[in-house]
Length: 390
Image 1 (cartoon, rainbow, N blue to C red):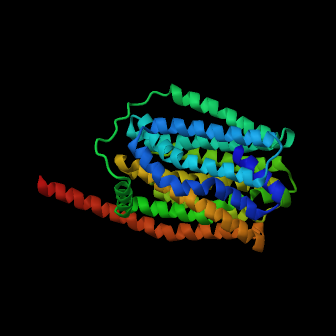
Image 2: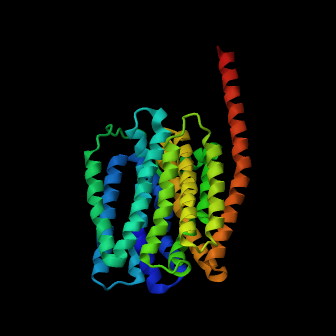
Image 3: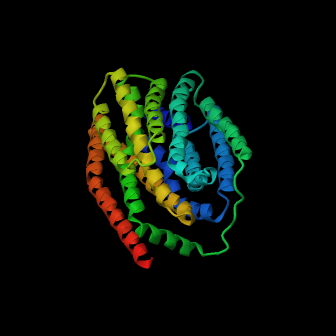
């Protein structure tokens, strides 16, 4: 709700696609800057306590934004400043939040499904939030939209306090921060099954995922609508994302996730191509739903593969690198998309992003196939060595 409301308010004030990109940049680029520190904090301390602190801080930020807006004396730069604060908070929240699922799930065979179900919860919020935000923006104003977001954190914090998790056992080995950072980079370098997926996620975040930065333009200019229209577009994308998460949660444990990843990456690209030049709203919403399916499936599979294959002691730092790949590339991409759309138009920009998504799927199909073959060879060599030892 807050993200939808902030984007709409900024676009209403400025009528600038560049400022839309800057809004996303302000909320997410700080996560890129501080994510490595957030990963180290997640590996050193109780992730549960870190998450509790970040949620309280997020609530304070949301309430401040609501008070500022309700007072009626706000500017774009004040909204951007509070967005920067939220970006810093998220730099510590994300590396603690995702690995916490490993502590909640006792049977590790259920982990891929648990991660998909977690994503479905996020995407149900993405389904309901934008639509509700659009209605509230039209009928009650941005201030009340931001206030509801602030109040929602009460439920989040109570939920955290009710959780019963294993007692955190701090590491007995104390290392310098520089050494821990170096360990993380070395681990990624020596683990191509993770680094290749992370590179795919980074490129997609930079060049394709920022398409949603331009959705207010589609709502107001292409579809001749208002804030409610913007909310509906986001909600149909969220509906597809929920479908994608249910699909992933229902997959069998032996399913080759990399094949599913490539298929959904291609679907994402094709849907962007179609959405870019459709002006008939009902048909555009059907395509938006499929876009959300492809986008969510791609992102979640990347996160699932990385988390399943990463070592326990490195998981927090690995998640911080994911935050860098996602929160670092996405805001830069949003600035880039906002600037390009000023030159070639919003529909042509999203058309170009669809083409790029297909190119990424084709290029990485070769890398992932090589990695799969290499993995089989390594397993074969390991089995041969075990036989020789016996």
